[in-house]
Every structure is written in C-alpha cells, then in structure tokens.
Length: 201
Image (cartoon, rainbow, N blue to C red; front, side):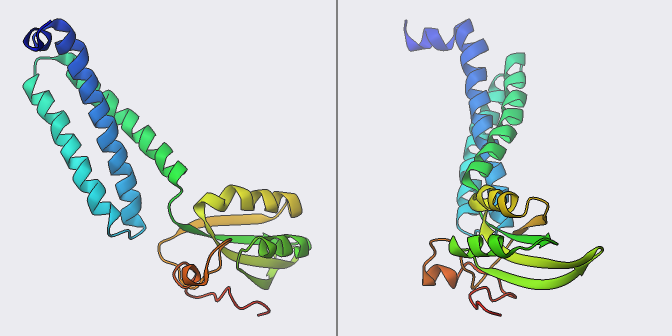
C-alpha cells in the first residue's frame, strides 16, 4: 500500500497518530519530571539538556494535536500520555536515585554494633550523646547516597530495630565519606557542617 494511502486511512488517523502522541507525551513528561529533580539538586548541565529535549518532543506532540483538532482519540492519547509520563518519570527517578540524603538515627539501645557495621562499610558517621523523653539516647548522623538507602535501613533494622530515623534530601554536601569513595570524591560529596572524616571526635 502506498504511503499516501496509509496516511489517509482510518488506521493512521485513529490509531497510529494517537499512539505517536501518547508516546511523545510519555517521553516529554518523563524528561520534565527528571529535569525538576536535577534542578532541585543544582545540576546545571543536565537540567538544561533535558529541558531542550522535553520541549522538542512536546512540540511534536502538540503539533499533531493541532493538525487533528477533530480527532477525539488524539485528545485522549494526549491526556493518557501525560498521566503515564508522570508515573514513568517518578519510576525512572527512583531507579536513578539521584543525589544524597542526610540520615539521622536516634536510639536508646546500645548502638555499638550498628556504628561499627556502618563504619566498616565505609559510611562516615558523627555520633552525639543526647537526652530523650525516657532517658539517654545516641544520635547518629550520616550522609548517604540515595541508592544506598535500602541497605542502610536493613542495617538499622538488623542491629537497632526500634531506632527512630529520619531522612531528608541534601542539595549540597561537601567533605564526606561514602562507601568506595576516593579522596577526590570525599572532597566533593560530604557534609559542610559535620566533618565525618575525623573519626574519634
């Protein structure tokens, strides 16, 4: 079948074009979701690149919408692609696990084994004695890569299962210690107000 006949067929109008719009929206919204994450992390190179790709794909999708204003399937595909793109973008962001996080652990139980295991695996720690509602507590601060979160939580559950811990994103960190990090990486990925590379303090 000639290409001109394909482009004028019902299949092209009601199936192929809507599918193209759907996938274009999935791609551009996914790029947008990851771009926002890069902006929040201060990634000055990747954010503009993703913004460029995002708007190019969006223009392709919206262009097809304007060419097919009477095609309801295109509107549905556009909306479905937007919704799916949000889901895919969040899924990709979780898989990429971009950035670092500060983890605070507070426990009233003996944390010697937990501290020892974290340090043996290369995590930089700062420990502080505190006073909780029911008595003395140990407070542990550390900076971790987002991709290491699940593993660190497993260690907490293993050694101090009733410990309280909180987690929050870090926009910028400096002078930290991470598992497998080189000295050069330690100078660029740590925590500005806690010198975690000074053990014994």
